[in-house]
Image (cartoon, rainbow, N blue to C red; front, side, top):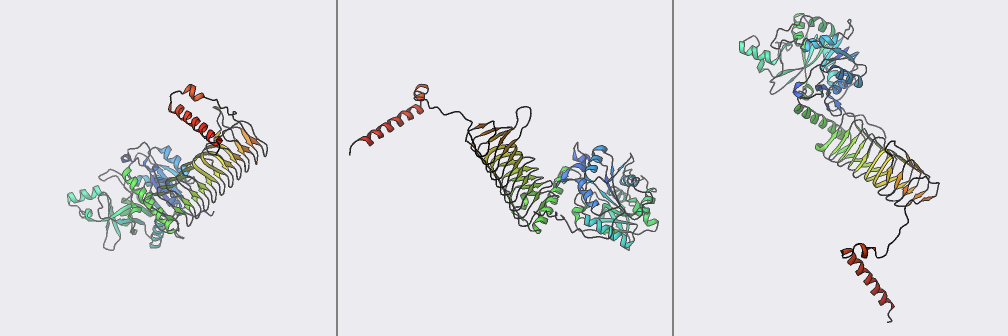
Length: 511
């Protein structure tokens, strides 16, 4: 099985010769509208946190440095950054509010003599792609701009900062919504700013020297009392630098998450893009509306994904497999040509041509060999099941090694826990375990041996032996007549005896 790289969910990732000197990701906010104990940027969609998506997009540009600005729940966010991108730098924002101050804090962890392009993005804008950041860097550097801002046109720009251009089309300034309202009310110079539909995404490319110098001149003299990053644009123009817009048509890439409604909306759009991307790569998705695929999942060509299926985490599915319906696979590897139906799996490995389901539960440590079978109502945990081996139905197999070609009968229980410790069971190659058996671990059944149905096995076997571990059957005559007299069962027994006696007599009569 050759894993396939996940398709980019929104656009191509090109080979760019333009790499930013640094990317600063702003992730200091609390996100009060989420009404959560979890920092906003740590809420997940598509198998990554919001911040995880932002870091992946930034790292994809191959920057010289990647810095993340944190404040709210600092240790928790910083710890997550270390897990996701160990090379990222952490910058702490102080009590001064505003995006301008956040970026200023981000610069403190970068070299003081840094030159080149510095990108600024946000930890709550999960659909922003590496390709867009590459294009932004290229446009900024090729035009020789001091500042380049990513913009978009919205039918309803309420709440967004408006981009005001000059007669030559360059960006004159960005006016935050509340300030634009104040301009309208007071009849100021930018009274018409509220009518502008072009909005500031908050995503920028700066010349490093311009950014560092102009941030020292930014004040908090505005409606919010914050240090706006947008003020750098006007200051850069005053200093003779070019400030231009880089407009994109994909509005989703500029949208942030502020509450759980937006979180769900962004998650659905991300999933739509991922699913569509895999379909364009040769995967059949029967019902895209009920199929969820995480961003780091890989799926091979000609695989069929049936309705109500979730492929989560780092799941890898080979080619020509069938997954679903009604299945959830988490961090699971599925081989070519395998079939998984109505199953839940986690940290499991399913070999090529193997079959799983329906109603199977594969817990961590399950390894099913090529052409093997885990059937209906079977639960496995820390179990290695060999090539061609079968665990067809109604079985619990925990802490077990099952050899190639072995068959485990219906209702078999691997009794692995003695109340204190877990113990291992080994089933040899081509060994047959009869139905309704209990294998009391630790036990080792040799290759080519048998276990009689209904046995409670506590000892191992040698090759070719039959283990019988059950009481000898004893039939007690007339027990029903004595203990269940007058019951329907007693009546049926009497009727059957009479019929049998009559039948025997008729067979003995001469013709």
